[in-house]
Each structure stands twice: as structure tokens, then as C-alpha cells.
Length: 361
Image (cartoon, rainbow, N blue to C red; front, side, top):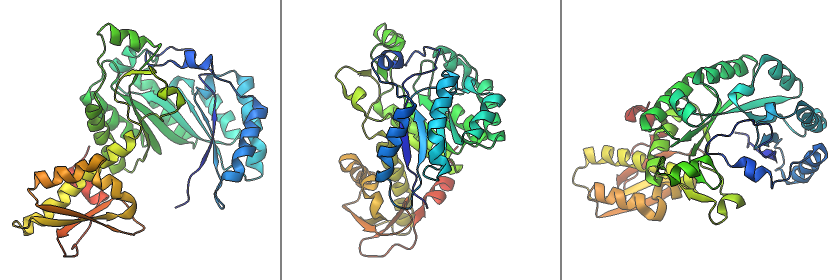
């Protein structure tokens, strides 16, 4: 599989006329530098020498609603990238925007400039949640825009948030099921955080909003990831990147922030997968109390869990006196195998089999 690499250009909160309750980007954007076309080319020139040999990067415009910024600025950005597309130094352009920032005319010109992937900041497919967050569009608008993007041949990405006002587990799983119907090429999921200088901060201080705990967010996101991936839809990001802004004291007032949120979700999945593998072994060897647990070498930390919590949990759940972890170097990841100590496992529990046995959404 070819390695995917982005050259990221950050355009802070340009083009968004809305003030969603959780967003403080207008405050941040006032302090952030907005690159011009020359700086876009300078960033590309700086990044190209760092790209691994044989890898052609994608150019990604992040941070703002690209299709709603001033058209002359959009055009200048896209024209700045065109020479690198023409020379084969960049393989395509990725943008993010709102569902109500899409039209046939916009998609036609984006095609002409080499845009290949469009990510929509959807957040939820429940209209009640969208209204409570002042998003300014409906779930029907999302479906219309997403279908149009697909009809024009673009790769479709969808971005969601869990824990918004009015949201709950049932609504998140409804959103997941609806999103699966759209068959996007990728998904990002972000737990809602209470950030300084937002409407959500005011609601939180007034007791009108309660943030998810870390455990609640991990549980919901685990269910969503399993559902998406069981339907062949990769989740390419879980949780906000712990950048300098979020690390500032007082930036995050409440909410399930963890610098390795995605890793924690993966650890929960491996815990369930390992539990299923152990049950299969103990069904044929009910009196065994020492087991070996196997995984691919790159998955070791996910199997062991945060502070070895997965191993401790498994030992407790199955009354094991000892649980050994062993690794195998293999091209394939995301499998778990279990066997009585000193015995090679008869089979691996692959992720696809785990999905079927677990009966995910």
C-alpha cells in the first residue's frame, strides 16, 4: 500500500459566516497569520525535500471553509498549486468546507483546478443537534451536498463531533448509520471540547451544557469506529491534534481531551478483540489459567493498553494466573491470537471476523 502524505496549508477560519457554539476560531484567527499565494508555494518548496522517495504528496487546505472564502483568494491558492500538479510533484488537492458551501458550479471549477478530495464538516446528521449547535443547515442539506460531490467524482470525507448539545449515544449511532449510507471514502471524529471564548463556554458555566467524560467519549467513538470500519470506511482521525493552541493553560475548560485519543480507542477495540479470542480458546480448554496472547509487533501497545490496563482487565475477567504477550512480525495488522502457554495458536482472530461475530452496526 502506498504511503499517504499531506502537505498541509492552514487557512484559519476564512470564509465562515457562522458562529457555531463550540468554535473559537474567529478569536484565534485574529491572531493567526493567513498565508498568501507566494507563501503557499514557499511551504510546498520547503516540504517537498522531506517527502520520502517514491511518494507523491497531496496538498491539503485545512482550517477554514475553503469554498466560502473570497473567490479571488480561492483562485490564487489553487493557481499557486497548479505548477506542482502539472509537474507531478503533487498528486491532488484536498479541501474542507461546510455542506452549504457546495454547488454544481463550485464543483466544476474545483475539478478544473485539480481538487480530488472534499471533506464536509458535518458534525451530526440529527437535525435537533445541528440546530442546538447553530450549524445553519439540515441533515437533508448534508445528503444533497455529499451526493453532488460523489456525482462529480470527488473523494468524499465526512467530519463528525460527539457530545454536542442535545446529543447522546443513540443520536451518534444514528448519525453513524446515516453516514454509512453515504459511503464516504474517509471519516474524522472529534469529541466536543469546551474551549475558551466560545458560546459553549457560557452554556457550560451556566450549567446548560455537560461535557462528555473521557470514558463516555471513548465508548461512543469505539462504537462508531467499529461500525464505519466494518463497512469499509476508514476513520482517518480521532480527536483533535494536541497543537500549541490546545496546550495553552486554560484553553480547554472541559471535555474529553486526551493527546492520544485515537490510540485509546484502538486499545479498547483490541481489548474486545482479545477477549473474544480468549473466550474461543477457553471454550476448548476451560481449565487453562496461563495463556499466551499474540499480535503483530506494531500493534503491541494497542493490545497491552494504557498503563497495561488491557492485560490487567483480561486477567481479571478470565481469572488467569498469567497472561503472556508475544509478537509476530507480519505484513497484516489488527489481528489477535490466543493459546495455552507454550502452544502455537490454531487461528488468528482477524478484525473482519471480529466485526461479524460482534455484530456491529
